[in-house]
Length: 136
Image 1 (cartoon, one colour):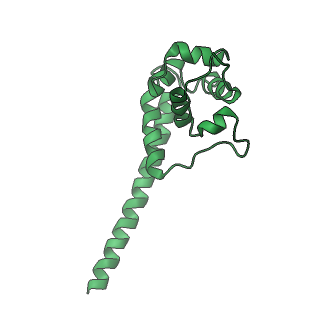
Image 2: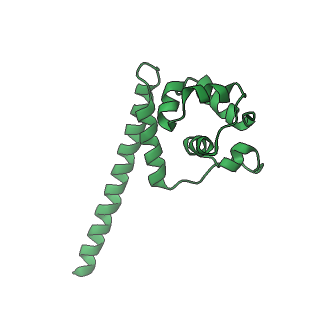
Image 3: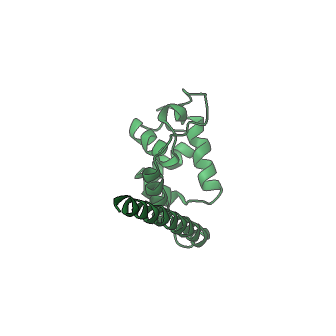
């Protein structure tokens, strides 16, 4: 049994240390066993390839970056807008009631989504008017 990669420990400590997400919510979102997560946090267990992929997907980084194989950049994966919105929805679903952050986070997400929807409707109606005017 190997040791946990330092970047995995760092990301997990940051996630739980800031009380952004509880360990339970993280485990629920990633389907990683809570005992395994505890072992990763203490640096005493090497995550399986499947667990590394789940952790990488959760944090939006690459598996090679988690392993320390890629020293360049922050390991971020470029996500499409659809993937970003999907991750945001999954994150909201993983927030535990009573964590203190849920109301503010959800309000911010709703405001951002509402603003984006207004922008899209404005663009769509403008494009429709342009097409209608071109036909005449």
